[in-house]
Image (cartoon, rainbow, N blue to C red):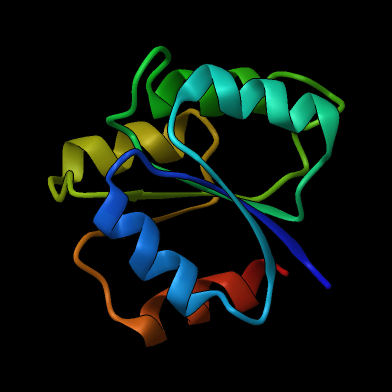
Length: 117
């Protein structure tokens, strides 16, 4: 079973994503530093990463992972409420593989996940 690390600090969004991803093994993390710690313990098949999270924001988490040879091949999908082109471009420039704005539809999330898994 594919393992997805979800980095999301909003409890309602956590529940929605958890419900959508019932066919995958998932781990919900609510903080950037916890994400980095978890990736060091177990490498996920994909990371769904919010931008506005505590301790270390999603941009910094993405940048750290993509600059590390051990983790740069993990697909990172930024899942965020930031809908402006500026934020999307920044995420893609630092190495995010894709970008999905909230609120999102089930089909949109699954299409992106299947593209990278």
